[in-house]
Image (tube, rainbow, N blue to C red; front, side, top):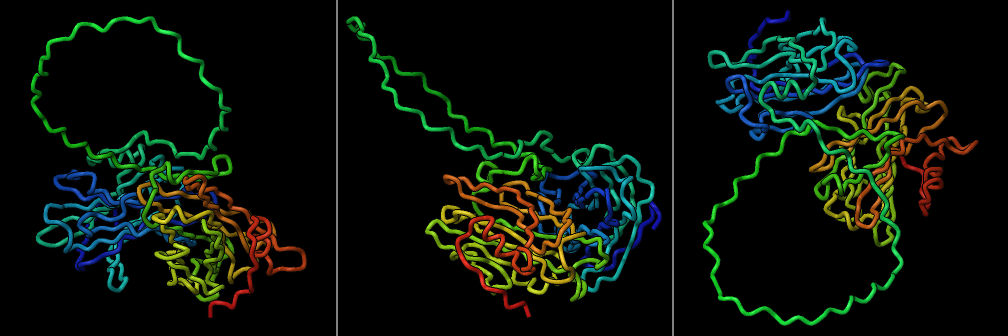
Length: 435
């Protein structure tokens, strides 16, 4: 499609696919949708993106990223479910660490959700210094829906784009809460005795006067909190964040692992001999119980009983396009002592060289927490991603992102080396495979 062109959308449910070519120095981008009435959102709830992934009506959803030679970020729209007041659904893209000039092959396309048939495609070719783009829009026309290619850029990022459509944006979000150890205990020193007071007779009694009656006025309703556009990125320089201080005190926290490779295997899981990573963890509970949640151990955990951690069993062969997922039930924080999250290369390559992986934690009531794993230069087939530790009731995440080399002459002993390096006092048996 050319910019400004439009096409009818004859199907009820569509998938919106934002895509671009992966490569060295290419920034990340995020898809979003704004549901408009008379050109503006009705409230902040009409903004669907990574921090607010489902519209209250259920009609629009942010589905997340798929890594590969072509990176995809996905939205889904159920058109009959869109509220009748909504006239337009804007499809936007934004980047927080570059400009759209750095993207190659940036496009948006509309697919029939039932069979994957392409209904519309618009390729953006004239981007320069923009950090956000309205790529297209779905809009009502004569009782049906159409898609228009737009291609309007913004230099003010997602915040500027969202504000332009009426979103109240948190421009200065609170910084991520770094873990700070408690101060040392103070030595006890008795306080000096109070000085002797001279006796003074009490004042004469006062006549009682009842206070004036106050008219009761109910407090005004609190203003809705602005939308937060933040993500928390853990780095070598800033490796820790307190889940507790960040507001993540309950609910299910999903840990997602996605990856790309420069070895030409394409999007993982598209074929059985593609690159397949396993997301795993060791856990230690407050009562001293230790164990693993790991596909090769045939231990998938339990979200509502110990260990309160569960592996997504839908990805036992690496075939899922949403990556590997591990869920942790933070309603049981007091039962956790420590958790070590790691990944192992199951098949598709001899080591982690050329692999770029992103681990993202999605806690409830807190911004997503991201960390990247890349730069392997040896024969490592295992890597520690993060530790989660309960420190005096405060749950603290520490980025590790460390490749673990097996001992010399023991190419399959990387897991045992993790156990040794991170002081996990148990023996682990060889996995039986996934098949």
